[in-house]
Length: 422
Image (tube, rainbow, N blue to C red):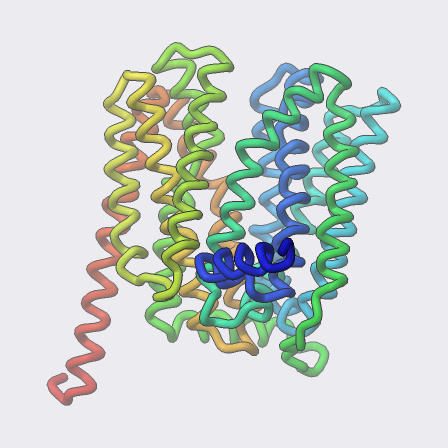
């Protein structure tokens, strides 16, 4: 009776979320569910720890530079290695390295020897790990589930990320109040065991591009040339660069807007961030439930305009409840966009070059963070958080419009050329 009920339940879940039918993906997803919770616990605790040690928002901001600069610098090189070696093996190495970094920070806190430069160096080390981990993780997904349910798998991964973004910081706050920040880092280290065990249980046939030694630069050039020659890959990359730089700087925009424009305390700011997470989680569940038709190119072009409009509305608004609602919609819109962009880049890449294509994805998506933070930080400092929202929305609208026009002209010229009219 129990087994029959379990089979019915699994059948219904599999119908709504077909990626869960794949055993390898279930191993990966469950491990991620546990591990990402720990990652967000560490993120929240580390920010609080830095402010406690230094009392400097500027030094806190430098941690973002420390973590994302290696992604900016090494992503293209990492893509070559991802194409040359089994992605499963790479992920085991990156998860083990991340676990050691978390334990190192925990030991420093437990022994009362932690200093800012320790945290800075550990953040830089984590950035180096992420430079390899992100393209490996992204390109590994299609090996786990195939093209047919890739969008569903990516959307389900987003549910993990956004659920963790809601729960992780809340748990970290409770733990810091009860037993101190060190336990957040220690527990994060423990959670990596779950994802490592999950990856160990995965059994897939690796896609490897075997090339002679000394061809790193030609391999990078080959990957970039492949991307440039593909209209959909080029356009997706440009759209991702614009939205990531000007439309996703929440860590700077929301706290400044909450304090300076809405006059909120830390609790009010926390609820605004929670509303972002709720919107993102809802968006991920919607995408996961409606992924049978695959990624939508129309969504790639339409959603950035919606994001621009939401930014402008938030900038001219001074209502707390309306701001929370608009920020919730913003989280939903960005999940629609990022899952579509991720899926389109993977599906339209060859197996031999997918690692290098996704290294460009990680370079643009994560590497644009320091540039975007610098822009909105400067505007917020001079003109206020509301102006930063308005400027970000206006620039996003202008640049996205330009890319859409160029893409349409490129398609029209190609169509006319094929018909012999050019």
